[in-house]
Length: 358
Ligand code: SAM
Image (tube, rainbow, N blue to C red):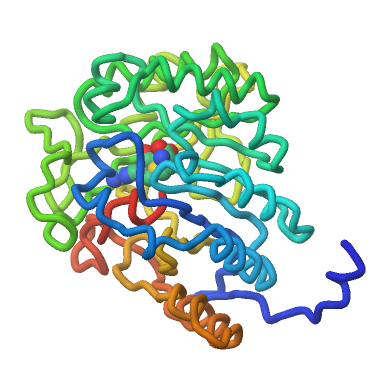
């Protein structure tokens, strides 16, 4: 640690009312995306004005403050973070902070051929790439605009740039999942990637955008239906499908996220399962989110937000008010979410993930 940082007095760590230390920030740099995934995008995707979105300088100030308050891991996300102009400059600046242990990125991969090397030089240590399907047509249907080959090129570019533990994220929805689950696992094992399967969370269309046509509302599926009627494939079913073909050994790996991990056969591939609907993991939650418009979101499943943008832009600057607002928001972090257990604090994501920052 540098002398400069040693001399800064230690601040009270961020701990929520349930004793959970908050050390992980997911920072969204844009709500825009070059894909329109059925379960994520909404019609408002182009409606946020550039004035509403935090500047790179404002994002950096927030990230720096949060690191000073005890955040040790930051994941840059969006929307699609790599479409934000000059995002590499922001990432490089955040990446130099000596108190940050991990700088990660979640991306759809399409722009990695252009940016993978720069991201590595900027200090990004881990990349998660979303890949829901290896079937070209289904991939297009799921993503609205995505070309599978572009994503595969992006994955290859990340590998070529020297990223070692690349993780693929697959949101599994009812439909071709019986085929896709083992297909994705075999692909990950063949290429030495980790792979996390995520239960698809419902979006609250009444509260966000009524009649959102992009949402996948399959019927006649073999998935599970939550109390709010939204079909999903439970993690247990994913696990079962995998064990028909592979040997899965539970491992104790903790990446600071919500996954449970298994080693796949005798390979280096770890399979993760994230089960926000069938099995909550809120007791270990260590994270908060900040949207591209500067709203602090203490819990994915809660509609509560705290506006940091107005305080960031206040003249004269109000650093104490900003810190106090962050602490107050964390003091109100709910014990957990419950997408399917009425009476629940929320029945669905109160806003689509491209606005929240996935
Ligand atoms: N554009 C980047 C990407 O595609 O990874 C980053 C943003 S995206 C919102 C982050 C993650 O959120 C992706 O892995 C995506 O699949 C996931 N996601 C979005 N909506 C979701 C939902 N309704 N349920 C579960 N995961 C979701």
